[in-house]
Image 1: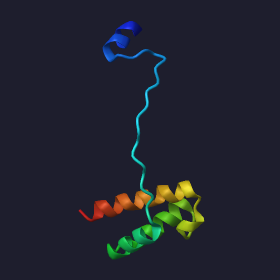
Image 2: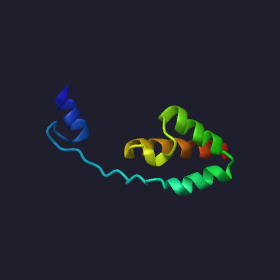
Image 3: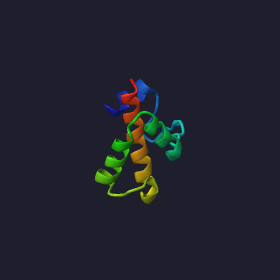
Image 4: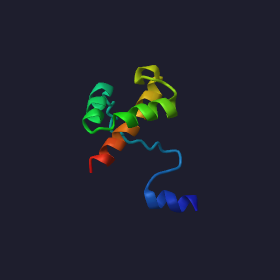
Length: 82
């Protein structure tokens, strides 16, 4: 079976497969917060930050949690602006 896949896809099992992923764009918390405020979603920002992340400010989060929170808020902003 392995030989079949090698012939089908043209590579051996020990070949390295690599591809470039686009760089992720880090969200700017200040700009996103301004967009959230403009969309009247400030209460949601504060509620999610306080209840789900147990902090008062985005800067109190570790970098990976900051990115997660900002991505969540960006998605919510997109959903509410449709």
